[in-house]
Length: 389
Image (cartoon, rainbow, N blue to C red):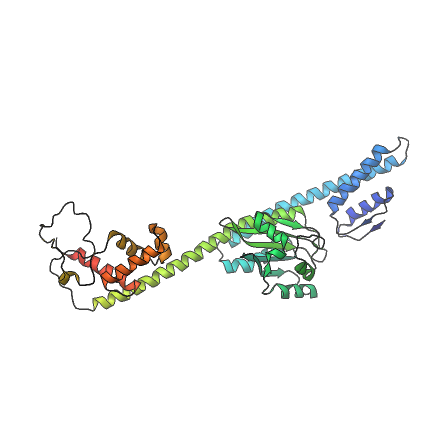
């Protein structure tokens, strides 16, 4: 029997004594989970007691070993419970601190907080785009070893096809977390990165947005600090779920800022067009009909009402014509800075129909740009409001 040294000497010494008692010549590897090894050893001792002769003096020794194993299992369970409760508090703290951070800040800070708040040695955040795994930021708490330098160099600018990484593919497909306790022997892992990182086991969790995986968190503990466990998987999974909402908020805010900037740009162009129009000669103020809004239902007035004159080419202009209700809707949407596709979606029409309306609007208003059309529409609508009734 051979026992490799391990960080938890109490557990491993107990296992070694039990296997020596059972005359088991197997080799105990440090890579085995101590909790699993304790359970296996306990079952062997229980089978020994069940099969032992009642007069066997070794029964008392086996009972003492079983009692010590039970005490050690209880101790480890208590430690895991305390560690999990502490980690849950740290997850809440991480999310609270980062809730208003933008996406670039999240990519920069999340791996650091995973290491420092959740006691991992290394953490990495990656994005997923068109079946490609793209490492974005790798943080290493102690980055002075040659292995860590090679790891940092490898992930810098790396683009890994998911087809070569079945475990990450599984995370993206099932939208669930995963753990590999022995990545060297795990056929699901991407062996190149495992070898470069000298990884002895890691946990990974997805980051979601609108029902699909947009990123993955990876974390491990190198240099035999301690093995990753099921509790680590549960904690990283919980953090991934919380960060999904944080990333979703940051993405929506950035989209809103871009849309707002586009609206400001469009209205800036409209303001410029109106300024140019304001500098032109004053229009004829004789009572004429609104050349844009004339096709409104005429329920309360008739064509013979005073001040309600039928527009003529001289009063409305040869190119302005009358805008239909649909053309006015298109103009209203265009004034918000909406694209053709967005206008089509809002009005439930095709993009080709939108383009056709825009051509007619330009022809009727005598304009050559979207901003000019909106400005002309605003001017004519303003003039209509000033006409005597």
